[in-house]
Image (cartoon, rainbow, N blue to C red; front, side, top):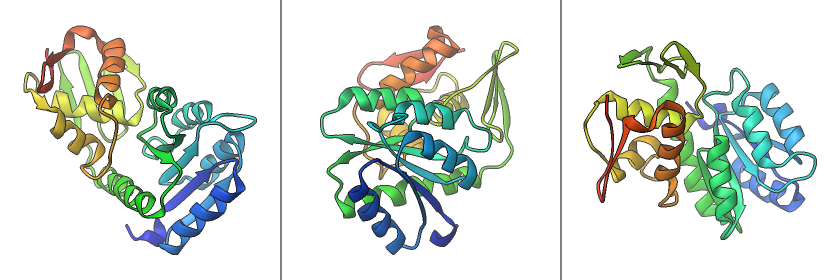
Length: 228
């Protein structure tokens, strides 16, 4: 997909950030839309169907965490990539963002070159997802529909955030195989996307809560595997 066909939604209550970031993104050829708070961001996301949303955490009317949760529950936005803007050292915001369904985070103050590199890496994930073919897999009591991003566990549908789904799909693609941490980061987040060292652990914890702790085994110092 060409840059001019890629839609990016930037949501932030700081006018300077909206102006600077939108200018840099537009200069790269992307179609850019902006919103000044979480509520407006959710409305714009539903209308514009962006491929990528850059979402500030602390905003009036509705913060980024709540906005992210609402967007993730919106039909048609399942494949939208969401990255948060967080102040340096805000570990709580980053973890809360992942729990809400975010794919990544960008640390303020924003450096244009770093921003562009991360945006390009994130949008490559969109291309990969859109090229995916219809694929329904059954592993034990789990049915994984990669086309509709749907999980059925023992007859009950479970809604997973994008990265939790992709992590589960990867681990269940080869049950009992140990996936190294670096392989997981590469396959799920992309090898050019820099995420915190605890990112995989947070997503595994959430999967254990939703799917069953007995299915996810930690191989200390190596990675994780899915066990039937």
